Image (cartoon, rainbow, N blue to C red):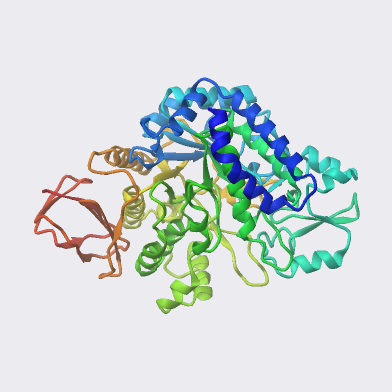
Length: 604
């Protein structure tokens, strides 16, 4: 199998790498070393990994496109917060199966600094699990148990940067020239200033600009995110070889999908914004061809929090088969705040469609903050000032707007622009926390309906619906992070919450919502909910209603607490709402109650 894949794909991999490193005298030596790495990694793939690889390259095998099937439902979780450690996670597999989850993304679990580590995204070793979580062997056991239970394992490939405690960084600090060239390290402040002049500040509360001063060297190192996360220098082919080796090692632990973290930032060129540059795509394609040769069943998932037009550029079989859908996520919350679906409908109509053999990963919340990634061009088309609108959304979701229901925390507030992102759990951002604090039955009813509406709409979309652990129990914000010296500066910990497995502490609202999500999972597997990524978005009539069609199923959702109406095109004069079982005659005109959603299957 390896030889066939090599013969089929090596020419294209060589072309890609030549465009990055072909000017170097040792280019063919780099190719030869890479071929040895791939051959060695391929030889290690035995058992179910080899079976998965065989299926991935055999078009006659079933479940090759498992990610397009409607029965695929995901969850992302932190191992320590969900189950204490990896051995504990194995004991929780029955729970995951009971709620229909068969795609599990484990948040970063490789070794990292004990104190500040960006939730695990500052990796000190890709070959060692954090000791408190277990060992590499424990991780392999988890992968094996997931496989036995028909579950896919997803891990992060943090390839833009390492921790400053990584072996490479420590050697660079000691002055080792080989490893200093693994990063962007400059002694001339004028060069640093030239780079900074065109770069966007990602974590302005951490430090101004994108560089951190190193006392050990009296030099500056590139740190796009936190100062302890050093950006890797992919203009150096040694970095590509080293990270390809790490990627193949992770894949051989039993991983089905790698989430490519911060992929838009991996290539740098002076005088540019250093985001989504053409050679970033070339680099990702090179990693894809390495995987295609050595571990063909491995899929890549894109994490590109950039302009919506740039997000879709990463989604194809030569780069990322799967992609987070940050536009859908952000616009669901925007629409919940404004009760106006026009921006949601316009934006998704323009940018939903991706290759038929690829899929979106759709979500309401995740481990990270909410950034308002809608297109300013779309907003202007609707008469909306993007800057002012983001300011409104930030105030709305941090409780600083009259009449808001949301309880969220600002993240990375930029003192120069007033811009920020939003943190909080799905339940708190949806108004449940406020309703319970005020002991207001009507507010509680609206909050629960709001949550049900967003998840019912999400589950009806093509792609993989992704739950964030805790959302299935409608957990509220946890503000104790403010008392932790190592967390207080990072408001994302407000929604990174330890799971309470004692049912006696569950509220009626939590139990109710958990049962509702189970119903959605069951209905999503209904034979009527076809797989694939076909969808047709209806034009907006009543601006409170978001509507789309999938084959003979019409989905209509009211994003407001008032009654709304909508008309749909249908081939039949009756339909059944899959969510309630109710039959509607003369279904062209739909009257929707507050936050009501219907999955209308035509009775043909």
